Length: 514
Ligand SMILES: Cc1cc2nc3c(=O)[nH]c(=O)nc-3n(C[C@H](O)[C@H](O)[C@H](O)COP(=O)(O)O)c2cc1C
Figure (cartoon, rainbow, N blue to C red):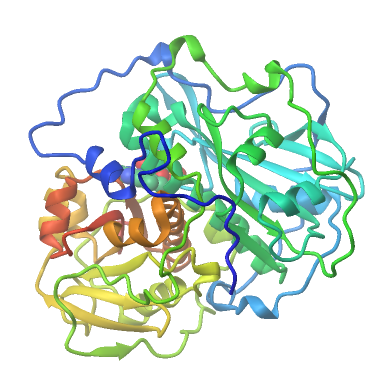
């Protein structure tokens, strides 16, 4: 398969300072005893919803006809059986958006009311914004729109057909008659306000959670889509009216239409006005975290070195003696269906010491065994700590997603130690399983350059959202964890020198009264 190379990047020879994944991750590591207190300035807390002045708004209908799907069949459905969709209408677009990001609860907070949403988000800070390029959508003028999930409306930023432009920015790969292209961005200060330089991790993980919700609805509708992490950053940011430093595009998803008809529209665009560029910013109060800017900027280049020959991104020092297949996909008939398990998802931490069944573990493992679309997930390693699973030896395991098999890396009980490593979040000790997202960052840097960090972190977020969906469908508790002492986590898990834990998602039985 050919990979679009938009820039020829010479690592460390590009003139400016470049940061690689390993350095960024290390520079933003938590170390025991050195965390200190970070004063939260509530007056500087960014608005959680982006709005624009003086642009045309299109209200969407929240009352959508729900579809129901067996979650396990949906998660495991092969993408190549999906159909092309040349056109969507306004109602269908509204449906995709409400399934991707719905407001799902209202809780009091220091800054007023906090709306929780269907995707999980570190600290419920929701840095991710969604945009869409639509054309020939009945009821909607062709153009570029921003989605506001609070008022459930679209704001039109540009009019016109941008398919030719988009065809260029993704390196002329694939079909260019997309019915819709979705863009996922992050407003960096939304999470940096609390998590400072470490927040670039959460921008990517959180965005992965949102992306996966869109992927699930497109799969549920049997539609053909592509998740794109490789595109010309500057041109996409310009298209969306972003400065690329306060807010920047992280991922795209295109809904594929059939055929190779020449698209309308040109490949040149005008800059959007300053009012659009400044929407969603609180510049006077924003603290600049140069590491975020630097890491994002360093990832601009699309780079592949020996990626055809590097087949394994195995992160552990020890190698399992044997691998066991995870068996057939369990029947999901007894579970609550999609989309209930996405819309009703919530983080639950009140784990009880009851064992998880082997069948339920197998559901998670199948849900995580997704194909390596365009290699963006290739470098992401998935493991798990099985602590309290009936019939499964306790220990740290690797999941070989491609071959749907697991290997015991080393036996033992680990959730209590991991709870301590995760800034002593004691509730983690009671979870039946900790799912682990890992990457050999040194190898990642060598193969993909700094942009590789986006692939693995977005991928980890996407898989995290799947774990939440399966947990909710079974009636289990689940919670993502991004706060841990990084070097201690690597030590506890016996990772390679260049490998690090990126994200952990705990799951297990919970106290239903909680
Ligand atoms: C990337 C990421 C990291 C998270 N880290 C933690 C964590 O370290 N500890 C924790 O208790 N919850 C953590 N969470 C859960 C969030 O706090 C939770 O998603 C948010 O408060 C919204 O609540 P909800 O998931 O119930 O909608 C994390 C979630 C994400 C997506």
